[in-house]
Amino acid sequence: MAQSLNLFISTSSPISKPSNSFLTGTFRWPVKVKTSGIRKPGQFPQLFITKASSASSDPETASAEATPQVLVSSNGIVSTPPGQDTSAIDVDAVTEAELKENGFRSTRRTKLICTIGPATCGSEQLEALAIGGMNVARINMCHGTREWHKRVIERVRRLNEEKGFAVAIMMDTEGSEIHMGDLGGASSVKAEDGEVWTFSVRAFDSSLPDYTINVNYEGFAEDVKVGDELLVDGGMVRFEVIEKIGPDVKCRCTDPGLLLPRANLTFWRHGSLVRERNAMLPTISSKDWLDIDFGIAEGVDFIAISFVKSAEVITHLKSYIKARARDSDIAVIAKIESVDSLRNLEEIILASDGAMVARGDLGAQIPLEQVPSEQQKIVQLCRQLNKPVIVASQLLESMIEYPTPTRAEVADISEAVRQRSDALMLSGESAMGQYPEKALTVLRSVSLRIEKWWREAKHHEAMELPDIASSFSDSISEEICNSAAKMANNLEVDALFVYTKDGHMASLLSRCRPDCPIFAFTTTTSVRRRLNLQWGLIPFRLSFSDDMESTLNKTFALLKARGMIKSGDLVIAVSDMLQSIQVMNVP
Ligand SMILES: Nc1ncnc2c1ncn2[C@@H]1O[C@H](COP(=O)(O)OP(=O)(O)OP(=O)(O)O)[C@@H](O)[C@H]1O
Ligand SMILES: CC(=O)C(=O)O
Ligand SMILES: [K+]
Ligand SMILES: [Mg+2]
Image 1: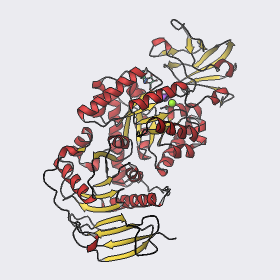
Image 2: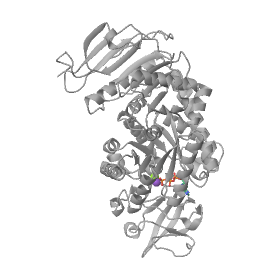
Image 3: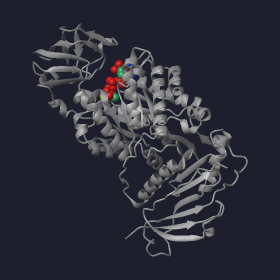
Image 4: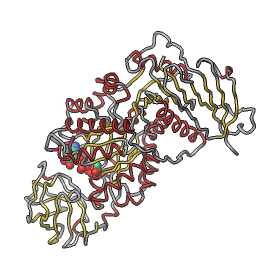
């Protein structure tokens, strides 16, 4: 049966009820909302799309699923009720300052993640990163103890509370790929050309002998063969296997470089990655499960899973989280960093709440020259499937040591921003580099500049966004968001407002990558923090009133009182409670 819409158009003031409507008609779904005209404050009609009750007089619309109604009325908003409590809205202090200073058109759309390590774990350093634009703090369970990570989480939480930030926490699992041990406390060790090093699975009680590296994988000596090439961190340092003696593997350095603690190890035979028993290692090791329990107990916002091979592991983890923490909405991010993850890309992304292009390990598993095209593909697919996507690793690698980036690094960041990935991530640059804040500043300023450039020059081409809804109600949300984003671009509105309980409608709007920023209002702090990862969203926490009109008026009053919007600003508001679109000037 064809789905249909009831359309009411009213010329009365927006406080009028549908009884004032002068035109009612039935339209085929999906309805195309076409708008045009020059922006003149006070002259925009309001357009409401709302679900009608199923007790419609039209037999075609009286289906079990509620059908939407469209109500269009002229502009004019009621004045705000006096005595509104301005503290009743939460927005992070950094965004608020930025909105006031630059106006909301120029807020940054690309989100920024910083890996926290020894260089940035103190409260002052964390605060500096938050002020510098860090949206998400990442802790990497490969390094440090749970106690150490717990303290970092506590500091971030305290800063959020005391200073009004909204920094979310992402926990990244270690995964069970092969990596080196801790280097006996040294922060790095140099391997020179021709030196012979021993890679061993032995547990060394006291200090590590010279030229010795611990390997975490028990089957290491069995899996490698004399003549294999051993790559540290995907080729930063290379060795050739020359001899096997019990659990010890002797290797000669063929490409010198710095060995870092817990660096990743891969081995290659006749030019291909060797996948022996190590290919059977579980994606989530027993240690990872304990770390995940820790993450759930600490209430982290995101758990990123390393070396995902298939969708099952994501599904399994998601049901584990649900069972462990009924009310939690920890999002699961799939790290795309292995050959298997590329092979099962679509099903993995579909099962996850987001993905990370983990270029560090990915570049160790596929030829480096293949990484850029895979990045483009993953970013595109994530947007099509409406999942946030992070581009990670080596964005500003040289800034671990130097205070300015290379031109090539700036070009790399620009490319990720131009692809319109949701977020960019710093790794070693912020975890143990010399210039964490400077690196973040570079990410921020390059993002802003490139975003502005493509907005002004309309460099971005429209992306075909396939339908992803799985129910009629979801289809309505999707159509509303697609239409609202298009209207926002055509009408050159100042902002999109989205009222969303679970964040879904906010992410559907973000997926469209509209020209204006998206103010996302949600009722819970956890959803608000989670939205921090998504492109273009400025998340607010707000309790909703019973009807849309008073919620809108409340928002206007609160935002105006804080100087974040002003009379005459043109906004489009959409809501997942009413499934409506409204175009209006701020009164
Ligand atoms: N908690 C920590 N304690 C000590 N050093 C850390 C910590 N977190 C990160 N580092 C250092 O920063 C470097 C880069 O950090 P990052 O977390 O990106 O590591 P990575 O090994 O590249 O990531 P992954 O293991 O997820 O592939 C690490 O190699 C390590 O030297
Ligand atoms: C971030 C990460 O895990 C990588 O790039 O390998
Ligand atoms: K990791
Ligand atoms: Mg990795």
